[in-house]
Image (cartoon, rainbow, N blue to C red):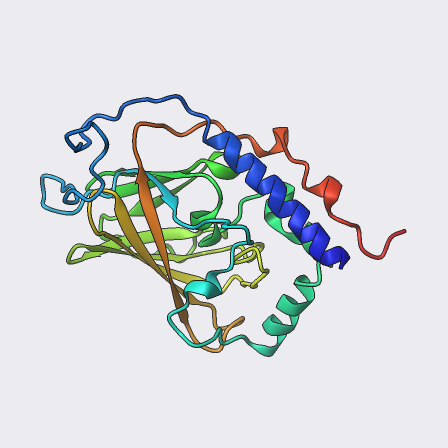
Length: 264
């Protein structure tokens, strides 16, 4: 029961932080197609760059994030179940008791890692150039990642990081991003699904129209899972707004409400 209460409290405060991120005044965006009543036309065709490639630029936010429940990527699986290695399944079950709440990087204001950061409360901004893409994440003290599109190989000697080393290429109108070089210190989602430094994440970004994008994500971590598994994330464009400064440590009250198990 204590574990359930603790998890609920953490979720409430994360949601509270999310609401703060949304308090922007109206800042009209340029180059946004609009309906006759002046509202953004999110169903208009997806924009393209001069070279004909889809333009993924913009501020995006996951749909259905934290609809009264913690993040759980299993809800959008494209397989029947997640193929855990025995030790990974045991660790997940232990984490779900609440014993390891304080080991969750997000409770410590540390990065959530990839792919969890894509579904975190708060929005993320894509800045696209022909040779690279930068994604800036508003949540958890402003994270950023680079996706190199210049044809380079994956860096074999890249130091382990929270978001890994990412390279991308186009498959028709879909951007396929390979990321490796993770530090293994984060959970895949709030449920506590584990990863190791062997993690390989494959993302497929497809902008369906002006205001909607699908992101198919494949987890390939042979140390934690017996085979790769895939889930889908849907994100929508936010217009007439901008990212806000969000410094996690200024408002971090998670640890005050997470029990220290084993201590009286």
